[in-house]
Image (cartoon, rainbow, N blue to C red; front, side, top):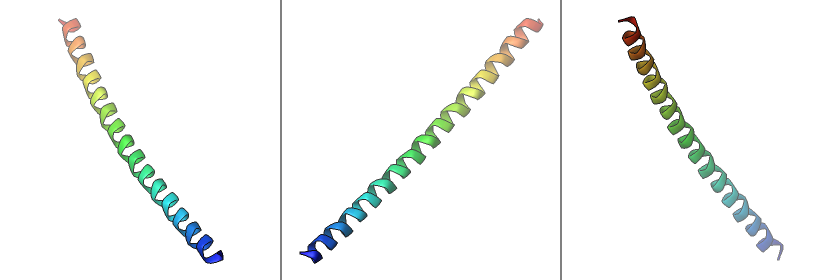
Length: 58
């Protein structure tokens, strides 16, 4: 009985480890996607402001 409990605990530890690993990988992907979105928005804002400045200068 003690051996079954030990095996069950080992399986539980591995399952928790796998879930945490997959969760961390997904968080990294989400963070990378957000970073790309922020960079694109910053570039678009910069181009928009540059165009507005050029129109005002005329």
